[in-house]
Amino acid sequence: MKMLINVAETVVADALRGMAAAHPELTIDVENRVIVRRDAPVAGKVALVSGGGSGHEPLHGGFVGPGMLSAACPGEVFTSPVPDQMVRAAAAVDSGAGVLFIVKNYTGDVLNFDMAAELAEDEGIQVAKVLVNDDVAVTDSLYTAGRRGTGATLYVEKIAGAAADEGMPLERVEAIARQVNENARSFGVALSPCSTPAKGGPTFDLPTGELELGVGIHGEPGRERRPMMTSSEIADFAVNAVLEDLDPRNPVLVLVNGMGATPLLELYGFNAEVQRVLAERGVVVAHTLVGNYVTSLDMAGASVTLCQVDEELLRLWNAPVRTAGLRWGV
Amino acid sequence: MLDAAFFRHWLTSAAALVDREAERLTQLDSPIGDADHGSNLQRGFAAVATTLEKDAPATPGAVLTLAGRQLISTVGGASGPLYGTLLRRTGKALGDAAEVSEQQFADALRTGVDAVSALGGAAPGDKTMLDALVPAVDALGESFGAARDAANEGALATTPLQARKGRASYLGERSIGHQDPGATSSALLFDALVQTAEAGRE
Image 1 (spheres, rainbow over the protein chains, first blue to last red):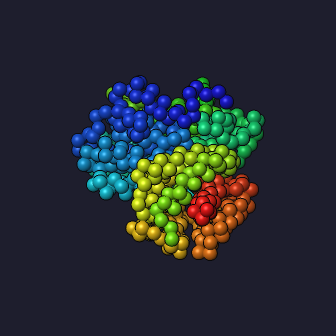
Image 2: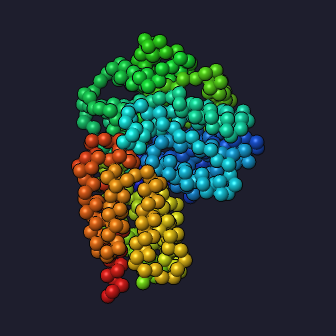
Image 3: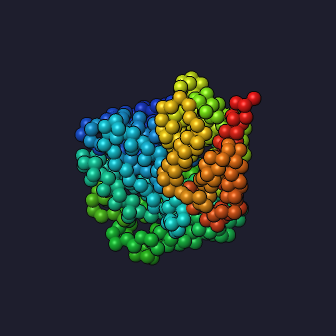
C-alpha cells in the first residue's frame, strides 16, 4: 500500500507540523500533541476539549476554533491520546469557567479521559464529561464495549461549542451536549477497508464484491456483509437502521459523511438517495452537511447521522463557527 | 527478599521481551483489534526502561509506581491505563519498604490485578488480559515458574472465547478462534519475572 508519508512512526507529528504551518490561528504543540485555539483561554467562557486517535481528520483538530472546540488532543493512529495531553489542554484553555471533555465511547478514550479528569480536578480545574455513543450498528451493548461514538461527535462539538460561546455555564453546556448525543444516531458502511501506516496495508479483509453494513470508524465490523449494493439500496438500509432507533418528532440535521476515500461526487449522489428515504418516511430536514468530517483513513464508504433538533439546538447549530474543518457565519 | 534492583531488572526484561514479541502481538491484534498492540506496548515499555535507568527509584514500590505512570503517559489506548494501573497500584500496595518478600509481592500484585478488573469492568472469561493475570497471580504464591505457566496457559485458553470487552467485542462470534493479544502480552510479564529470578540466582 503506497502512502504519502515518510515513516509510520512520525505520521502524527508530521501532520501536526503541517497543520501548524497552514493554520496560524491555532497553537499547535507538536511534541506534546495538543491543538489549542490561539486566543484561549477565552475569559468567562466554558472551554471544550476533545480528542481521540488520529486518522479521523478533520475530527478533532480541524474543529478547534471560535464556536466549536477550544482544544483537541490527537493520539497515535486509531489509539486514544494519553491523560497528560488532556490535562495540558485543559490547563491551556480553562478560563476558570470549567472544561467539558467530549469523549467518544471507546474503552481507551473513556479510560484516558477519566484519568485526565481526575488529574485536572487535582489541579483545580472544574471538569465535566459527555460521552458520545451514536452508532446504531452495535445492537448488543451488554456483551460489547457499548455503542461507538461516530458522526454525532461533530454535532456535539459544534452545538456545545456554540452554547459555550454564548456564555452558558458548564452544567448547561454539558446538558446540551448530552441532549445532542441522545438525539443523534449514525450508521456507516464500508466499501473497502482502511490501511494504517503502522501495518502498511488493510487492517481488515473485505472482498471486492462485498460491503460491510454498520462498519465502525476504525474498521470495526458491523451487522453484516452483503454483496455490493447500489447507492439507493444503501441509503434505504442506513436511514432505516437509524430510524429504527430514533423516531424524530422534530426536524433533523443530516450528516452524509465520507469515510475518506469516497469522492464527493458519490457522496452527493448518496445524499440524494438519503433525502429521498427521509422524505418517504416523513422526516423533516432542517440542514444537511455532505463531506468528509469523521473519516477512517483511506476507507471507502459513508455514514449517515441524523440529529433531532429543537429550536434552541437549531439556533446553536446555525451560530457562527470558524475552524479548519467547519466554518460559516463569520 | 526482592529489592528495587530486582524490580528494575524485571521491567527492563519485560521491555526486551515486548520488543522481541512486538510483531507477534500486532499480528494477534490484527484480526480482532486494529493491529497496534505490539507497537503501542513497545513504545511504552521502552519509555519505562529509559525512565528507570535515569531515575533509578530506590524502593520496589517506587519502581513500579514510576513505571506505571510512565505507561499511562506513553501508551494511550486502553492498554496504557490498564497496564499503567496494574503496575502503579501494585507499587502503591508495596509501600516504601526497601525490600519485599515474594508473598508481599504476590499480595500487592493481586491488588493491582483487582484494580485492572475494576477499571476495565472485565472478569476472567471476557477474553482480556485478565485471563492471563488472574491465574498467574493465583499461582504466584507457589512460585514464579508456576505463575508463568498459568499466565501462558491462560493466554492460550482465550482462543475459543468470545470477547466481551474492548474493541474485539464488536466482532461478537467472529472473535472466537483468535488468541487475545492483551492476555498474550500479560503473560510476557511473567516470562520476564522468571528470567529475572533466574538471572539473580546465577
